[in-house]
Amino acid sequence: MTALNPKLFDTDVEQAPIRAGFGEGLVLAGRADERVVAMCCDLTESTKMDAFAKEFPKRFFEMGIMEQSSVSVASGMAAMGKVPFVSSYAMFSPGRSWEQIRTTICYNDRPVKLVGSHAGVSVGPDGGTHQAVEDMAITRVLPNIVVLCPCDSVEARKATLAMAKTTKPTYIRLAREKTPIVTSEETPFEIGKAQEFYRAENPRVGIIACGGLVYNALMAAKQLQEEGINTVVLNMATIKPLDRDAVIALAKECNAIVSVEEHQVAGGLGSAIAEVLAVEHPTKMAFIGVHDKFGQSGTPTELIEHYGMGIGHIKEAVKKLL
Amino acid sequence: MTCLHDEKHKFLEEKALEIRKSIIEMLVEAKSGHTAGPLGMTDIFAAFYFHILKHDPKNPTWEERDRVVLSNGHICPVLYATMAHAGYFPIEELKTLRKFGSRLQGHPHREFLPMLETSSGPLGSGLSQAVGMALVDRLDKGQNSNRTVYCFLGDGELDEGQNWEAIMLAGKEKLHNLVAIVDRNNIQIDGFTENVMPLEPLPLKWASFGWHVIEIDGHNMSSIVNAVDTARAVFEKPSVIIAHTIPGKGVEMFENDYKWHGNPPNKEQGESALAELRTLGGRIASEHE
Image 1: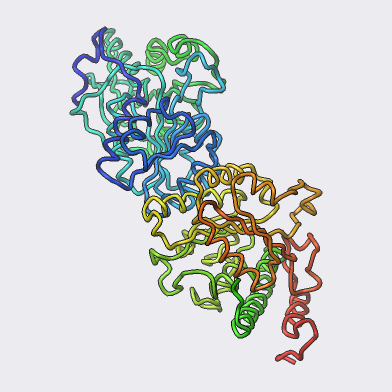
Image 2: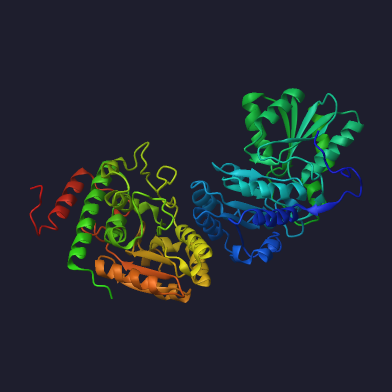
């Protein structure tokens, strides 16, 4: 099992917004590779591009509130040899800019790095217009693209550095609110590789989670073990290309899988897993996520509970599969 | 003002005629595709690929080349035909247009033809890409750059809001290394542009976004060349050349009738069109007769 944050299960576990890790990673990527440029759609501080903008003013471009044009501008920059990062809220990009991402980035196979912050219902009080719960579905259907959903700010930093080095179009999904630091500096990160974050002896259910809800999945696994129900938790930070081998191996071992994501269950991580298992190893599944609903205003905790993505919901789903 | 030598003028017009013939032939063979736009833009493409552009057909990835973004991808028959005549690939290959396995996809796709700067088809996104290219050109080369980014757009395409995002950004950034060429042929699929969605006063709209605006007759070689010279000499602004063209130019049957926007000529219509082109509208005897 991977080395995680030693304080993971403590009540005073450190917390940080996943987007903050992206901001740190982008500065490091910018220092490592001068081809890295960044563009933001009037949300520079909010998407944590401000540190990059400050350190590399010439390589930062303020685009104003124009998500559709911005991703195409990035495609043009990539055509000239740059590695452009474009950030906005996930609802607006890839939400609004989808066709431009399809045609000008993926169809051209340009290494543009799309950054969607404020994804999921945990955006909170802003309400449903601002809560992207479809972004992984609409990106992962596109050929050529890589889709990442890091579980905490430390992993987001590593993912940002990794995506800057690939030649593929990439989408990274970030969240607004502070969430517990699950991983540590030592936790490995590799695009396309699942990491086992929790393992109890002779597991009966496999839990595969991504994003901030990995924490809830781990808490559920720990509590379940205390109740005598053993599980494994995989952190699936890469939604595409999915680590098929890890998914199939876990399904063969447990014969029951629960997917956990802060996203519509249609088209997201759970769907990606089901697409593999339906062919390779048909397995009973339960899907934790948003079930065909829009978000609304509330605190992140209220909303996670309301839409059925709390620790209790994950435990319940596991028990139903026993 | 540049005055093209008579010889050069004649050379470019001959090239345009050759390209027009190829366009008709490839469309007849393909049995689908757009007729009006490609023929309307042929003179401009001939002027670009045989006089204006800094490019090397034998070395399409030459770093110092000018960049050409075709935003209205549906007029690709003129791009393909011009590139073939300029030596990028064999003219014979034009007959594969829109066929399975062809490098010449129905709308340009650079996975199939990597010498293209970009893929296009869905309207409205080319200018943004050209702006990105121009920004990088300036970032990397500063004032020493000798490359120009050219973006060809249709007029109907300007209905798309994304264009105006790009126009605004280019104006803000004062991208003097960017030149847009609008094919002002007044037609789109559902009719005349001013009926479908009025664009006028088009020059004032671009100017108000911080662009230098030049209007030309898009079938006059000297005007085309002069306009680009002027555009490249303007240092504080991006330039747009609004080229007034006749859709279907060169073949009477196609000219100014918007129904030819998205249709190819059939075999008989193609024969008649080629005869008209070969005889320069009946003024000379055809070499085939």
